[in-house]
Length: 495
Ligand code: GAP
Image 1 (cartoon, rainbow, N blue to C red):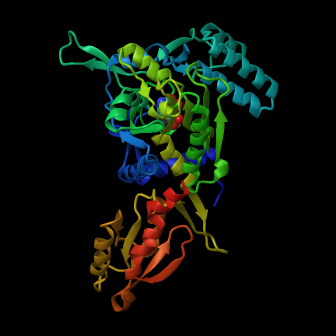
Image 2 (image 1 turned 135 degrees about the vertical axis):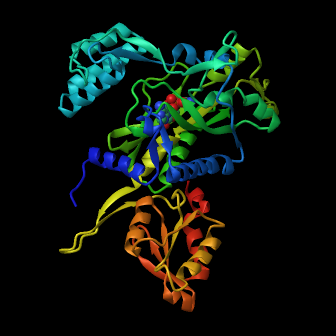
Image 3 (image 1 turned 45 degrees about the horizontal axis):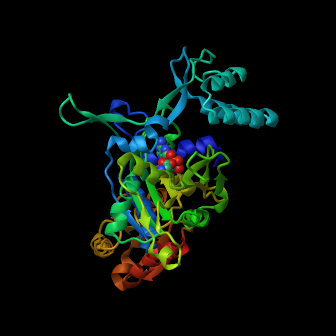
């Protein structure tokens, strides 16, 4: 089997995702909607399992973290307070010949990567420094100067006929209220975090939460990304799993380090090769942050951010206090008990924010293998998804060897028992070899084959996806064997 390069491997993962019902282009029969995707029957299961893993490790495993589910629509002032109305924008530039719009910093980043590939490291470093300076100073004309100086051409038209660089807000807006007149403009939330901040006091008071404590949430977010690319990596509608951890001012660096380590452990517990992960500490910080790092994964198109861990100081709660006029303070009894003369403060926040769709893509890429099984003259291959059993959409396939002699009936009794605990499937079509291959391709950890011997002694063959080893076991031992592999317990212990 010919070895595939990174581009081909990525394309193969995308077509595999479609072929087996993981991810479809949205509204495909109408030629699709750019950067919007639907999750199919197996994709929805995998996505739910990733959510469950995150939720359990945050909420179930931490006594001081609770989960909420806030609305997508929020009062428009929220986005004024958070800075999104004025500041959540990208510097964009249009090519006048192709009418294509690009993020100016992305064009420059691509040029830096090209310089690095060509061994022009000095040029790359200089351009990086110049770009950082221009971005920091929000100097849009200077970004255009850099694009021109480095002779960057439009990838579509090939020309350097550019407009000026302008800021473009990424929030989607819509009208709230039935009447056109008097309807208010509201935004589709660009992050779930603000739903947590505005509920800080509600949760703290109703849940009698004591600092340090966290509020977690999983939900949709929307961004009018101008450059939406790389499949589900950058979408216009996506899902985030965010947790805001409220701490005493002055203790934030301790918790920042704690969450940095804890979050990487959550990733590597899934068995993905740890060398595929790295931290990217931010040298340049947002004005409200005093520490920030990204967890990056090595995708076929390079190391890219999957998750951000940010120390956001008291910025968000202070802003909401100012804009809403409501006190966002916490009274720390323990501080008083420690003899400190004060007890009221606005907590500092450590945020962990992971994109569910990016985690999904990472999981598919990390699990996907085109395996050469050729022996001597005989060529053979299979595609296998080495998904962690807890994440696998289907835990076991129940396969009667033939469609007769009472084997389907026996298989169905096994299925009826296992389905009380797990997502399992029954398949009797095609040869057993073909059925194994199909289950390998969707990441099913176990295939259970029912044959004539089963009717005599109540044993079955269980085949393990990764090793392809087969084992004869008693039907009564099936449940335990599967449970050992797919139980959340083992995974949560390691995470
Ligand atoms: N509350 C902080 C926040 O939203 P962010 O870095 O903008 O920070 C957090 O987003 C995570 O959300 C990213 O690490 C990424 O995984 C995911 N994400 C952001 N924009 C995305 C998009 N357009 N499509 C898919 N995932 C996205």
